[in-house]
Structure formats: C-alpha cells, structure tokens
Length: 182
Image (cartoon, rainbow, N blue to C red; front, side, top):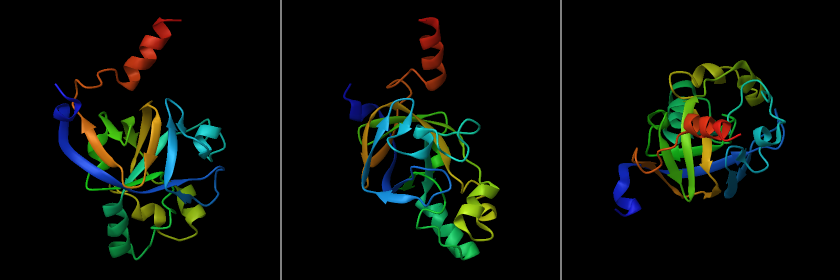
C-alpha cells in the first residue's frame, strides 16, 4: 500500500519555525532547520543542553497552533506572533493536542507527540509581558514531540498524522529495544 494511502486525513501546515541557541534568549525565526533523531533541532537550546530547563524538563521539539496564538491576541490582547511563546514550530490546520501519542510527519521528518507543554512563570519573564503564562493555559501552550526519524523541516511543509501501522515503533518501544540490545 503506498505511504500516502496509509496516512490519515488530519493534516496541517508549518507556518513558522523558531529556535534559540541559549536559554532565556529571544527566539529566532528560521525558514528551515534540521531535526536530529532523539535529540531535537540542530542548534536549539535543548539539543545543546543550554535551555533554561535543561536537565530538568526538556522537550526535543515543541509545537503550538497559530490558532491558539490568534485566540490569545483576541482574548488577552497579547501578541505572541514574534516567538515569545517559546515554542519551536507554529502550525495551522491541526490541533497539536490530537498529535499526542501519535506519530506524524513534517516534511521528511517523523515526530511523535509525547506530552502537553504547559506554560510556566519563566515564559512570562522572558516574554516580559504580564499575563502570558495565563494566556497559554487551556491547551494553548502546545506540546512536546520527539524526533523519530531525522531530516529537515521547512516553513510551508505539510504536517500529516501517520496511520498507527505505518511507524509502529513508538518512543517507549524504541528505548526499550535499544536497552535490550545493550
């Protein structure tokens, strides 16, 4: 069966990509970036181990919906379109919370949604605007994802959820299988 036939109808698009090499530094918008299997985005703070939460509460890659960013602007009059949300990949057309415990592709990269990424006081400090942490609550804070198969993602790439059978080995299975092989 062709790969395209095994994909689900749930799709979205990458609108913006952000990274920063150091924790607490402003996010920088990029047009493309390399995603490295089980590590994250090349040059990003969490892949480098220089993130504010490095060693404590890390995500390889974070995703947030552009729809959530617009809701925040409408409801709280806070404009986070400059990356002050501190998430790596801004998508449209798909609920990122529907990606949890699922594998999905962005361009030629395969990810697995691992957990919600709730807001924290640090994001508000770095954004330097009162109310940012509160605005990112209620499923607007995005999710964490692991890089399952590496490659490059680009602004404009399609995000597609994979059928359960297309990539059967999830993050937990991969870790268990690697440990068993040692």
